Amino acid sequence: MTQRLHGSFVEPNMRRFNIDIPVKVRTDPTGPLQASRTANISRGGAFLIMSPPVPNGTRVLIEAEIGGRMVLEGVVVHGSDQWYRDKRPPGFGVQLTRVEARWTDLCSALEATENEGLDGPSNSRVH
Image 1 (cartoon, one colour):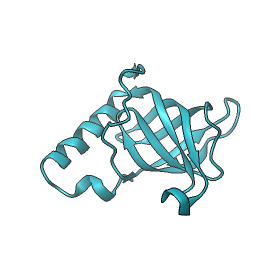
Image 2 (image 1 turned 30 degrees about the horizontal axis):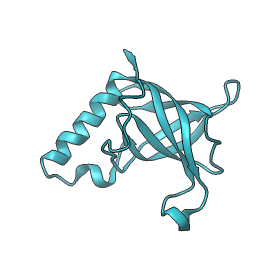
Image 3 (image 1 turned 180 degrees about the vertical axis):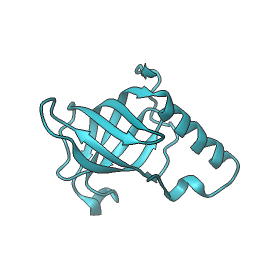
Image 4 (image 1 turned 30 degrees about the vertical axis):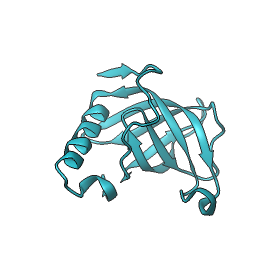
């Protein structure tokens, strides 16, 4: 089941979780999927490690294997190719426009873990 996200859902103060998830990204509707990883995620977005970054406004399709194949859609809202300046690896931030219920479930589980005071989400990895 997928759900569309609306602008009011995506807020700058959403909790972000530093989590390493292998993903495949399509930045061109006719192009190939490219291997990438997440640096952090939230209910409404993700920062993907990829160099060079993709220009703002680019529509992207993201595939992840979390309890099965999951497909997300979004728009690039910022990019960085200078690690030393903003302390992030090269990549780009995506505002998600379509997610699957499992994405929301994953973020809920990370929030619950954080609320319990466990160290899980700060440097987690999903295989």
